Image (tube, rainbow, N blue to C red; front, side, top):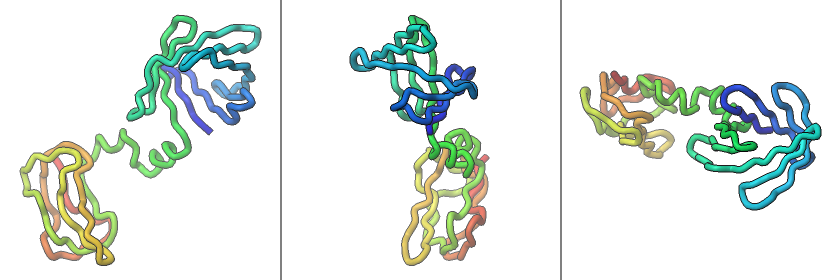
Length: 167
C-alpha cells in the first residue's frame, strides 16, 4: 500500500493500482487510466477526463511535481517502510532534531575522532565502537557543533548510552 499526499490537502491510498482502485480521503474511487507516452497519462473517473503529466521526480524526498489539466501539484509518496522509519524515529524530520548520539549497541570505545567544540558535518566520523569483535564507525547524523563527549577511549558502553551531545 502506498500513501500519497497531494499539496497537503488530499490523502490517497493505493491498494491495487492494477485494478484502478484507490481511496482518496477515505472514499473508494475506481478509475480507468491509460498511458499516453512516457510520463503522460489519461484518467477517466466518474465521466470526467484528466490529463496527467509527471513534471519532476525528486527521489531523495520522495516527492514529485505533477500537472493535472494544466494545474500543478506537489505529491509526496510514502510506503510501509517510510511509516516504519517514522514510527522508529528515524525519518528525515527527526534527523534534523538530533542533539545527541547514543550507542547503537553495547561495546568498547576504541577511538574518538572529535573534541568538544568541534564543528562536524553530517557523515563525519565521531568515534569507533568495537562490538562483537567488529569496529563500528559512528558518524554524525547532522551538521553541528560538539557540546560534550560523555565517554573516553577504552571505556565500555551500554546500548542507548549517550556518547556525544550537540549544541
